[in-house]
Image 1: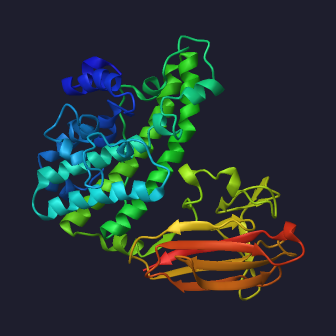
Image 2: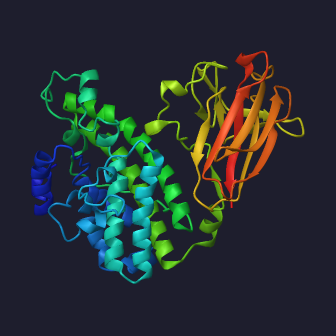
Image 3: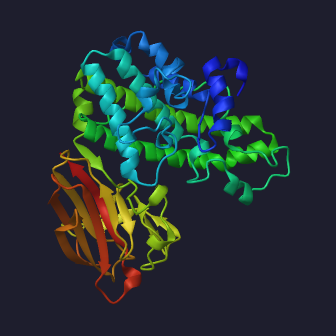
Length: 430
């Protein structure tokens, strides 16, 4: 980061606050401005017009509000929450928390604040709340915030000790700092929902994509730092920043649609369906499966999105026998093993039905026998025992009042090594 490009307030914050408040974890810094600007540039004209003079301020200063709460006291209230009284610097707005519900509540809170302000004609306030949301999304997708509980990377320095000029130095700043331009020209922002509940829920899962993407850049950036390879570092930073910009664009576009109560008909229709096949269940704390959640049947491993792992080593497309006894390949689904639940949060009163096909993978699951059970807030929604040669069982359940949807698969046969259980096309519908 070249300090001559930083606004004076940001420079003071960057240099002094971390020294005074060692528990804080600021991310991206100057790139916040570039990421937010790239996202803003993709918005349709009517949304840019709605923001008016705040359009430029969003990427020039509002997106830095959560980092500047000690120095910019006038705007600090736009990064505060009633659920955390007395806390000036909210670490949960910078570092993703273990619980999905905590992260979603942060997103839902500021989305609602922004939308309510727009509806009241208070565009200046709405834009500042939007700035906080931009900052949160960008921090969650920062390469420096990808290791739970180790944002200063002491742990990674133990796995990857440096013998170069980086030896003994904290890696947090060097990993994220830089002066670069971000562009997502041509990107079409997605509508995430037609209500705050739906939009914040979908946004949470978009954020998960950003976190996983950022994790893929962290080690390569450290390697580039050790090697003194600035270009390799920049390439990986842009990979993270580009994904962040897309997610931020989706969030701002959705907030402005909700604030103006203006929705494209096709975009609205697309929201009627939500596949959970790639969503992380709550058992995957911090978006990874702890060893305690691994199953041993039909192999030693964990659930897999949109595929089945033969023997835990070979990825196969999902294939099931369907009602007409024909074999069908599915692009959406979850391949899983025995005895480990998969639980998903649902947005309140948004979806009416959950539809899924449950069966055993064609071929390698031929000798299996599994009981598939769906639970809603701990109560049975449906259950069926499926043999390897049977067609998949079609579930359609009422989830209109369900907050937690759980998928269970349990061995009910003699050959557990064949229990390649599959939840195909797990879809929520309004």
